[in-house]
Amino acid sequence: MARTRKIQARTTVPAVLTTFALLAAGCGSDDDGAEVDSAQQETVDSAATGDDTEEAVEESNDEPAPDAGTTINVAIVGNPQMEDIVSLTPEQYTADSGIAVEYTILEEQTLREIVTREAGAEGDTFDVVMIGAYEAPQFGDNGWILNLNDFADGDADYAKDDILPTVLSALSVDGNQYASPFYAESSFVMYRADLLEAAGQTMPDAPTWDEVAEIARAVDSDETAGICLRGKPGWGDLGASFTTVLNTFGGTWWEANEDGTIGAAQVDQPEFREALEFYVSLAQDAGEPDAANSSFGECLSLYQDGKVAMWYDATVASGILEADDSPVQGQNGFALAPVKETDGSGWFWSWSLAIPQNAANADAAWDYISWATGPQYLETAGEELGWAQVPPGTRQSLYDNSSYQEASANFGQQSLDAILNANPDDPGTTPRPGLPGVQYVGVPEFQDVGTRCTELFSAVIADSMSIDDALADCQIIASEASA
Image (cartoon, rainbow, N blue to C red; front, side):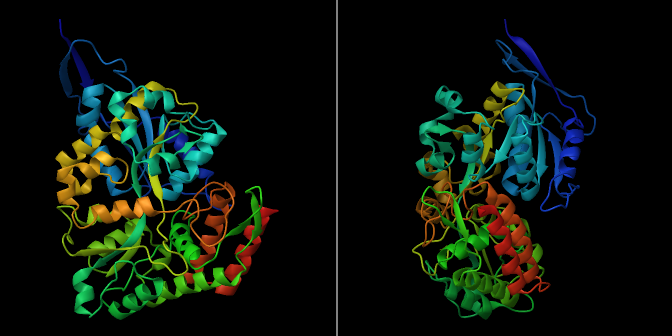
């Protein structure tokens, strides 16, 4: 006899907020707390469909799902791809599994700080956390997150063999998978082909930074900035974008000792100065207004509003720009990440889902991860939202899908090539300490050093600090980490 399972649709204010507020008060760069306000944090319950409603969704099943009635807490970064999964979760996941999902949505830097603090302190606030390729191998090696091998290898629906090897390797240590990729990306130049043509400019498919800077200055005007560059402090904000420039200019943050540990700081070297001077000058000459406070979200809005002609950032943005509801759909061109002394410079990143060591509901957490990062979600997102908006870069089956091939005709292959050609093992001209990485140095110390130094570099972009003082102070900060 079939049983009827009821899932209550409700609006909740979960207890996680109280714990979360206490955690947030202690997080930040240097001594300043990371203030989590309404612009940074939002909590969404996947069972909620309206204000204080008590509607029941009924389904007929032979047996209730094993985890029916469970609620899991999931911390994710706030960007359009994550907004999509939040919107799809109630009907596409909770209604089927019986597992309610309470999302805590955070600004990027705040997410990193809180998840790092929670994981290292054996916190139990979240069942699933979103981390990146920087954190996954380090957290896994530290035992802060669960080894996913048994979950993944025993789950046929997850189709582990479908994950691109480059991506899976970046989230693993010694063959042990510690996170599951929601999307993966490299970096490249996005540009308004019509605006460049009107200014008599042509973007090469594989430009140098000098060529990009020349074009940006040529198209810059009072109405439309030439280029949008990240200037917001943070090792994963300004730090990510700048470090790709630093790599290809021949600079590096630290020398590597023979055993791979941190050697002498290299911030005081000529190549580092040249890279920073170039970046600051381009941002000030042809960059967006208030560049010192801009990151992915700000640049995305400016680009879509026609207020910048070019944008150097994550390849994942291409799907947003070419989505059916994008005001710039069909007007965009895409070029490889610019270079100077290296053959390539694109970063590698994957926003991924992991299970903290003390998660209360590990089985339910994996059930959710398997859906959110598996082939089923890609199909769902493509059919419900449009194929251009599907989270890219993780699975070969997506790039074999004819619907996605059609929707991504002018960016899909370029994005995939950029991801596959990224070189985390050797991204610059000199060996680096720690684990592999392009736009970061794969050592725990980089999170603090990168954030503190980019606060200084952002102040230079804002013209409130001299580049000499910023470099001198950053050299001291970086040297302390190598002592």
